Length: 312
Ligand SMILES: Nc1nc2c(c(=O)[nH]1)N[C@H]1C(S)=C(S)[C@@H](COP(=O)(O)O)O[C@H]1N2
Ligand SMILES: [Mo]
Image (cartoon, rainbow, N blue to C red; front, side, top):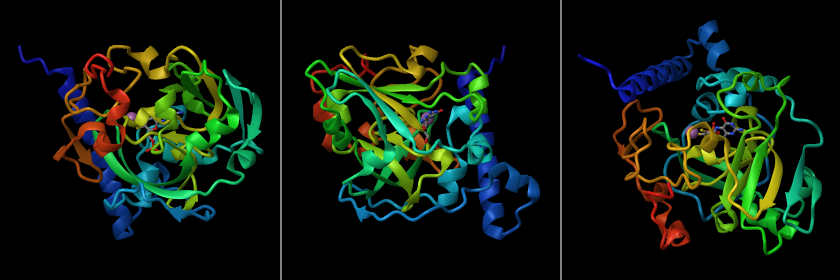
C-alpha cells in the first residue's frame, strides 16, 4: 500500500498555490498581465499616504513587495484561497465611521471611533517578520501603534486577565462567511501581558499607506512572535475578560491550534512541520524557523515557567 500521508498532500497543494503566486509575480514583472491573471491576483491599488515615524523595533530584513503582501493573504471572510482576498476584498466598504465596541472588565465601555482611537497617536513604520502556521513567511512593513495605548485608554479593571478581539460579521459584504470553514465572527485572544507588550500593535497601514482591505482594513492586530492567525483583521470589538477566551481556530481544531500559538520550531502542527519555512516568493522551505519568530529576546520572559509543548 502506498498511501500518501495527508501532510504531503497538503504540502503539494500549498506548493501549487505558491507556483500560481510565482507565476503571477513573474507575469507582473514582465508586464505581461493576461486578463485572467489580473482578475485573479491584482495587487491592491495604492491608497492614501500616512504620516509615520520609523520604529526602532523594526527588523532590518528586506520587506516583501506591496504585490506579495496584497495578493497572498489569509482572510477567510473573503475565501480560503490565497488569492481570494485580493479578488473579493476590494469591494468591501468599511462602514464610516468605523467603531470598535469596548466591552467587559474595564471602566471605559462603549463604542469608540477609529478617529478617536488614533487621536494623539504617533503612527510608526514597523517592519516585522511574519510567519503563517502553514509554513510561509514574509517581512511586512506595517504602520501601527502599540495596542497598549488603546488598552490604557479603556482603563481595564484588575479582573481583566485576557483580551478578546472580534472581526466584523457581515455576510452581505464578506462572502466567505456563508461557508462554515470557521465559526463566525472570527475571534482571537491574548493574555493581558502579551497584549500590553510593546511589540504588539494595532495596524492601520502598510508601506506607509492606508491598510488595503485584504490585509484587514481598517484596523487589525499584529503579534509578531505568534503565528499569523493571531492577528485578527477588521476588528469591531475588544472585550476584557477574566477567563482565557476561546478563539475561532481553537474551536476549529483544538489539538492543532492552542491559545498561545507562539512560533516554535520544536512543536509541530499535526499537518505542518514548524522547523522550517518558505520565505515568499521562494517556493522552498529552506529558511530555519526560529523560536518566537526571532523575537525571543523581547518576549521569552512572558512564558518563563510554562511548558510550551503543552501551552502551544
Ligand atoms: N478576520 C480574520 N483575520 C485573520 C484571518 C482570517 O481568516 N480572518 N487569517 C489569519 C491568518 S491565518 C493569517 S496568516 C494572517 C494573514 O495576514 P495578511 O494576509 O495580512 O498577511 O491574518 C490572520 N487574521
Ligand atoms: Mo496563517
